[in-house]
Length: 94
Image 1 (cartoon, rainbow, N blue to C red):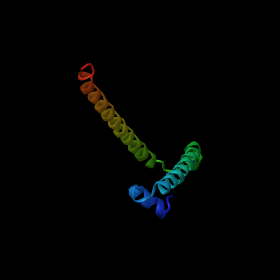
Image 2: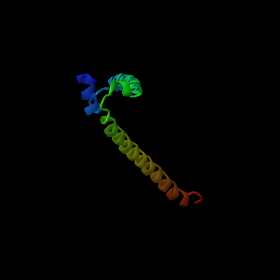
Image 3: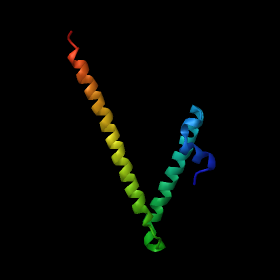
């Protein structure tokens, strides 16, 4: 699905320039949208197709794990902002 250069981008995006990163993100997002569209059609018609869609269970669990880690990361960032603000609050009226 991904070209070799897109795979290299996914492995180490920091080695690409800002404009190259933007281009690769655009290209990969476009492919993801197409993939999701095709996948929805396959799922809808799978009763007639009889495909083994167990791999979707793995994909689903991976997506849930990512979502949980992202939620945890956002909570950590917001907790640090609250902590920083409470430290600054002590010095607010001096």
